[in-house]
Length: 418
Ligand code: UD1
Image 1: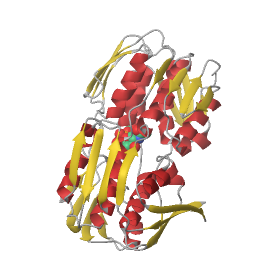
Image 2 (image 1 turned 90 degrees about the vertical axis):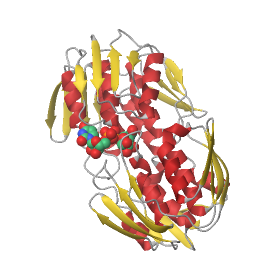
Image 3 (image 1 turned 60 degrees about the vertical axis):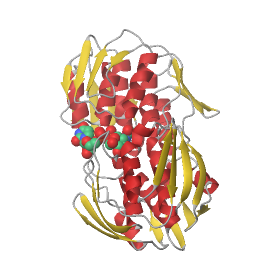
Image 4 (image 1 turned 180 degrees about the vertical axis):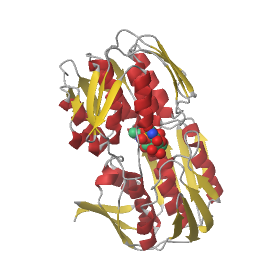
């Protein structure tokens, strides 16, 4: 076990080169087994979730190699349609494998997926959509068994724009017989990335980024080399850290429209934001004001994956903020840890009432999930005194070189064994 030891109160300055987006690379890895040909994903981030997904592909019989930051998948010999429960429980994204396995083998056996402990994460929409595509599904003892003699196109209407279900539908319908029309699709930029990746393999998909996606099934897919989009959640995390610590940083590689609402909220806090092409620069000086209200929503709304980080920021501003979490039931579990640092936050159901205290103080806290963990690091960086953040395994799931990148910006952060 390792922990961060953070000396708070240092201003941040410099430039951050962003990693490839975790939430894009994971579905692309799942998509890599749709062809027997070689697939290369450039600049895959060195994070635990990518390692876990690579291990899942190996269990299926694929060869997965990491070389100079790229990941190369050769699944010509893949023959297994079962994913061991130890791996699906560790990684919720393993649920995308249902779509890919069905397209490749016409059958799939997986345990109910895991991931961050942020509330119930049912997969009813995934299963509903797969049934529409001709899949028979049985569920027993925590396992899901799916089988289809033949996948066929269908009209699918999602009554909630689930990111994972949308991606799974693309993966299951890409080689189905006929046309699939998906209405009510999630519009996240990562879905556009998956569409582009599949089209580069020979798929015929249009409409990603809007709420209607059309998929014309194709007979085969070929190999591909691609460079995924950069991580908008990592970008947001660094911008919020700079706001909390004061200073001036630039994040490079992201389209500002992909985090437009965060930029608006940071301006509301009193930060100056400048955008140019794929760069965002933030200047934060003096004490910031709380945001009046932030409410998480599917894209293009405020991302739930930045909710914990903005709550940490607001806790050290002045004034009051209302943070409403609409996507996950229990995504405020990090709040008691922030309270150890002096945060004044009251949680009622899906709403957190934050009374800004101007400044937090150092404490020993424990990360309980990925983004909650990042929020604790942000709070510690901006706090007065020394903090320890324990259980880094959660943070390692999504942030590559987190410590090194923060240190380069001037933060005092060490990683030590417990
Ligand atoms: C993805 C992201 C995650 C992000 C989330 C919301 C990846 C790997 N993960 O997760 O980082 O926080 O989008 O932006 O891309 N739901 C159902 N039934 C379903 C599916 C979802 O009720 O079948 C509910 C979930 O419980 C949750 C909400 O819909 O309350 C959002 O889930 P979804 O959009 O599917 O998120 P994920 O794909 O799991």
